[in-house]
Amino acid sequence: MSKKGYWIALIDVRDQEVYKKYIEANAKAFAKYGAKFIVRAGRYENPETPTGNRHVVVEFDSYDTAVACYHSPEYQEASKYRLASSTGHFVIVEGA
Image (cartoon, rainbow, N blue to C red; front, side, top):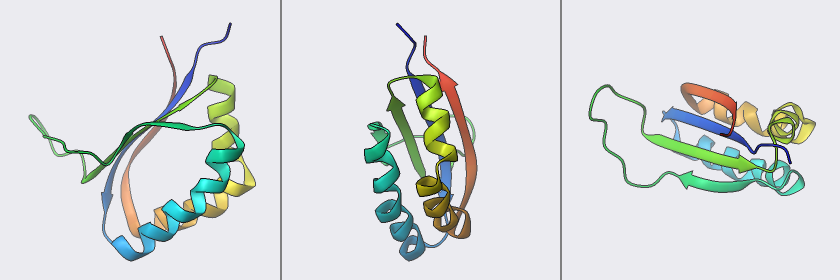
């Protein structure tokens, strides 16, 4: 059994209207690859250093699926909105 894969993003959204387009557009890729949101923009506290104003953890059935989703044409099209409206840190990791 393969380990799950995760996207972890700490984002600072500068333009909410354009970022909303990203959220709408990424749904196609997430549905295709079976993504499940574990964390999606809930309440947060930055006890040490700033981490942005939006935090997301997305779970996939496997690390390979998480990587494939990121590189898919559907997600790459959606990511143009994220990159145009925000900055941050984004990582794809294999679960424990």
